[in-house]
Length: 173
Image (cartoon, rainbow, N blue to C red; front, side, top):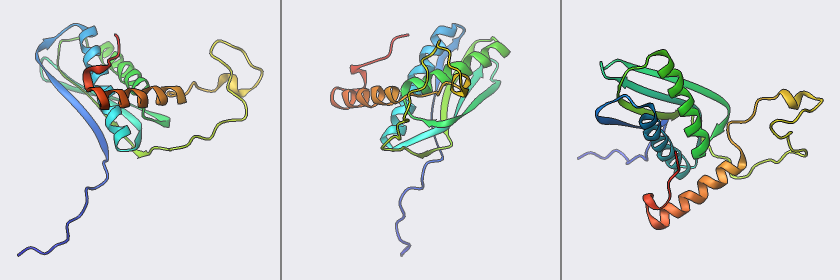
């Protein structure tokens, strides 16, 4: 008889989803729509697990079965649908620029997982709005990949989907 104690699940190292198309897809918009859908599902899983990610990776398998990857790491962890999907779409553009052939499979993964902060430290002064000029270093600081509003919208969408199902609300193209 096996008497080893039952251990809980190990913490996730990454959250990922991929899909194989029924046929090779040449239309970049169709690939991007699928990738955005996968990215929002991955983001939702992150929020369910109370995690955020620092690294986003896109995987594409071409019609000739060549597998290619592109990733990016952001300074501040992200969890929102918009941030993760936008980063994934930018990575897809980079992959498609390097080689434009029909796709057989597309996927997205989020790694570099950290616990999601429940409360945010708000700054004393708001950063300058996009398109404005300031006379200090904040004007040249990179725009964050994710804003508090992005997280709030994604969490609201999660609540709607939890109550009415996954197809109750979708993002446009």
